[in-house]
Image (tube, rainbow, N blue to C red):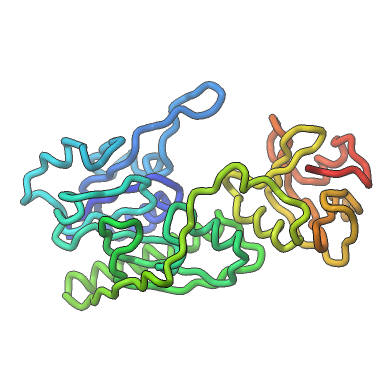
Length: 308
């Protein structure tokens, strides 16, 4: 098959690397670099970082639907399939229908559950024990196209969004290879999504990343792992942002929400609305991530002080 690939983020990059071991992409489409950091230096998308060398033409575009490089492509030169993963741009006609088999997406959830930008993070925030990947054909509505294949995947209790992203990228890429083979043989059957079961996973807002210590220890723990590696769940210490990258649940803890009630193995234990959490890895504003024990030794805090 003749294939193109469109994507942007970390999930797209991981899928691309998995698929590139078996497939050749004639064209790779990415968004342009964005200014990032204090110096506003241009930052490449995760996909461009891995696809910029040795993978054929790389096209940067802010709006794929108005990109002349693509729209001026003669009909006979369009691919059999455009694989679209974690792209962040809505694809419209005529691109949707230009490939022989259309535009096909790998989505890290069991659609129609968790349509949208943050399905992995939302599943973890909700404390789900199972998720999966869906390969489906794009239509004009967001993540609503017919399903070509699905695969379930269990979520371990301490899995972070980064770890789950890696696992689902592998599963989704292998599933896509099966779908491509089935399309070439004419053996794939499309199944419509049940709109009555649709749920949504919008992008995480900064306000949602703030830890609310009056919630249960499980809710706090799930938030921390859901937002690792980005954007990071946070609280405040001495009026400065403190990101919590890793934590574990501590049962039988009593105290005011946010209060540092114990020191376990040199690491602070923080009370929640129910139970508590042990801080394992943290990052003080303006500093690098570090073990919570090392942070605690220089934190100028004591038992009984509160975070938040």
